[in-house]
Length: 404
Image (cartoon, rainbow, N blue to C red; front, side, top):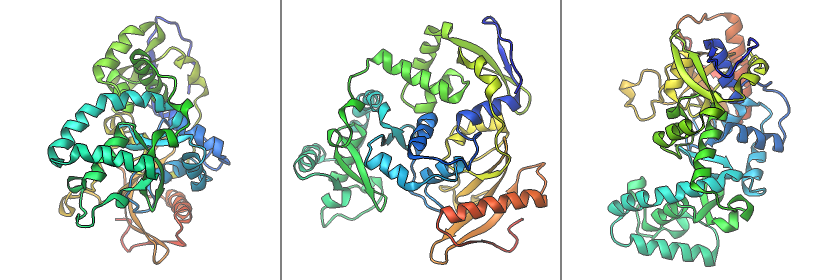
């Protein structure tokens, strides 16, 4: 990374290589992955990332665990549980998807609750029909008096389970009350949410004092830009999915004196205009070289959440194919991206067989131009061995023809 002599009237020009490294550093992927990570260090890592997505699929490991392990192999699950369920330093809610977030952000999420409540209420009332409003008050009263519950605790005996379209009224009430901030997730049991009153889950200092609408929008845009490094107003709005693109655009217009213009070279050499906070130039000389090891990313890793940005910066086209019919899949049901240094080098199809204690590797695809060298295969095997141990597997087995 070169050292920049910057003048306020100048536009910063970022090469594609430098842009990738800036973004990786903001995503926590440039630090030594074997440096001891304490519980406090884990909290700081999640604060830097902003959020860690939660997903129920456990092909190898649940998304939130794999996201954190990809950044630090000394990550311990019990630290995350303690931060969520004991220290209450983290909470679960939605950004663009279900995520784990620092509890210090909860006061800003109260604006999300107020904005989304009418939309959710109208939508869910249409498919729930009669009994919807009654279920709200009854469910809230049940929890207020009786304490935390799982969804199954409230399920009517005759109700048949199914997808979200077949939720029993109390399940719908639980989700609505959670989505609007009246309930919070106090813990999980076999990955099922345990709901309780928010004031019994989160200490008051996390949601008081109130922040104004202007303070909310400023925080959303400023904190997003900090974590992205450089971005357009659309990317700023999409990061948290809390404000609209127009609100982000208006924020940019009103804070031009605190921003610098950046031209980012995309992977195909084309320049793309973006913005950064005023202190951005001073941080460029300190951007570290990312580790050269091969790392397996979760399909829900925040590094690749913005698929278009991933393609522009890294030339890596990725789509998860869970909902694609098997015959039409290009790669597989749940294929993992492979990151080596500051570039994506391939993707791999694998699954943990927990009965056999084996991480089964089915297929590997290298990206165009990536050599299938013995050194790269050794680095990949070393990472798969680490991931297998983290996931509780005893060994890695490679299927016949896995190299394609």
